[in-house]
Amino acid sequence: MQPLIDYARSFRQQTAARPEEFARLAEGQAPQALFITCSDSRVIPSLITGARPGELFELRTAGNIVPPYDPGRPTGEAATIEYAVEVLGVTDVVVCGHSHCGAVGALVRGDDLTAVPAVRDWLTHAAPHAAPRADGTKADGDPAIADAVQSHVLAQILRLRSYPYLARRLDAGQLRLHAWFYEIHTGTVLAHRPSADTFVAL
Ligand code: ZN
Image (cartoon, rainbow, N blue to C red):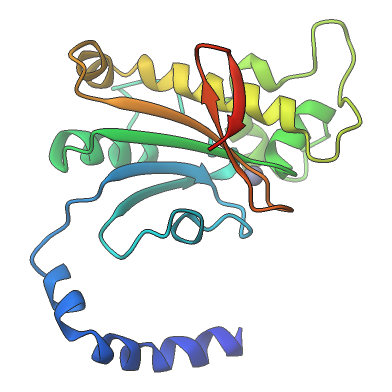
C-alpha cells in the first residue's frame, strides 16, 4: 500500500504541471462514454482507452454484471447507468469483459461460493449464457475463458436494452452499445461485430 500512498501524495505535483486541464474539471463533466467493466485490478479503462480525466464515466462491478432492470429496488449500478444517460447524456455505452475473469470463471466452473455469499448472490444476476453449457460440459479448457466471457458480455448488452430509457434512446438512434473483450495477457481489445456475430480486434 505504501507505494500507492507515496504516489498519491505527490500526484498534485503532476496537476500543477497542467493547471488549466485540471482547473477545467471543476466546471463539470461531459464524458464521451459510460464504460462498464469488471472490478478486476488488471483492467484499467483509462489505460486501455487513453481517456483523460472527465472522458469516461465508469461502472465497475464483479464480473461486469448489469443487474436486471428493477425500478422498485434501488442499486448503485442502476443509479450510475441512469445518471450517465439521463443527466450526462452519454451517447455510447461500453460493456467490457476480460480474459481470465474470476467471476465468469466461477460461473462457468460452477464453483462452490458458500464462503462468499455476497459474491454468490451477485452472480445470480448473470444471465444464463455464462452458466455451464446445456450439454453438461463446463469450462472448455481455455484458461482465458474467452468464449464464456464474450457470451456473458453480450448478455449484459441485452440487459441494458431492457432498461426502458436506454431502449428509447436506442430506438431513436441516440445511443450506441459496444461489447468489448479485453485480453489482459496481450493488451488486445476486441469488439463484437454484429454482422458476423463475432469478436474481432478493434
Ligand atoms: Zn473479471
